[in-house]
Length: 349
Image 1 (cartoon, rainbow, N blue to C red):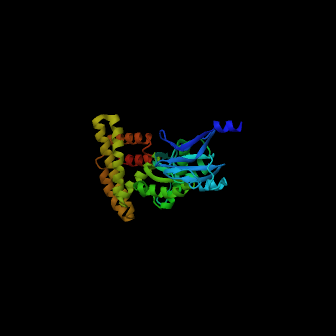
Image 2: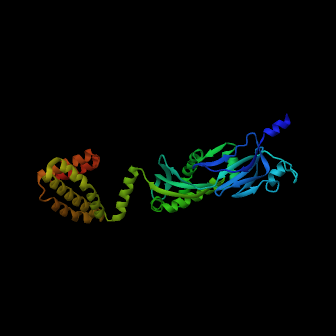
Image 3: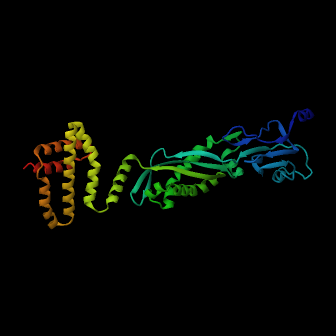
């Protein structure tokens, strides 16, 4: 009976893996009811590695090449099985192949804004996304830590874990780089290098080498982007309050004109724009003179009064209507509206 069982056994002469399709990181050679012929051939192609596992313990590791399987080419397995150097009978062992090709275009991104400390803004919530590429560098470690005894292990089963590691270490990478947000957004290559440096030892613990990482976009939530735009605008005019008021007026004119245009046609447009510019000039003069001291402010009073000369009652009322529209749209606050209203009504006295 034992002789018949021996005859029924199938002996393997060639062990190899011809990868079919993309996306498989590890594959176990089928060994059910089969044994490896002593002196058989192991073929490991370029971009592959193979390991022999004896009773759950990793034995010999093979890089690309063609090997004749003997006790000389399987020294660790020979030791584990207590083989004699002249042992030549078939044997049974688990053989795993690993793809060492680069797994490219792996996506990462922040599903929700993440909060980071920033020396310019204090704290910033940002979004970022990009891609990365990795490969298996240590098949023994990858086998013991990740793929285990599974028949095959696809990239899809690992990408979620790796993406999580990328997101988890973004804050550490930014802190380690020392870059403020504005420099970070402008120099995405430096950000990517800092993040790669942060991730490299973490990926290495899984037997993985991170080959490259790109940051394709870094952005703020919309509401913070508006604040940043205002800060940039103030930076452009510096400490010149008159220029700042001109900048603010220029920003408001398109919205002012749009509101006027909806209410009064071409004549209303011209009146709304004229009143808006006149109002901006008066406010700019008052602010600039106020910053220069009380005496200068007193000298500015006649100039402000002169600016008001020639303002018709119907122009003031039209301007108040437009300011009311700006307040209803949220462009002006109630306090700003009340202040401008009081100032315009004084012109009617």
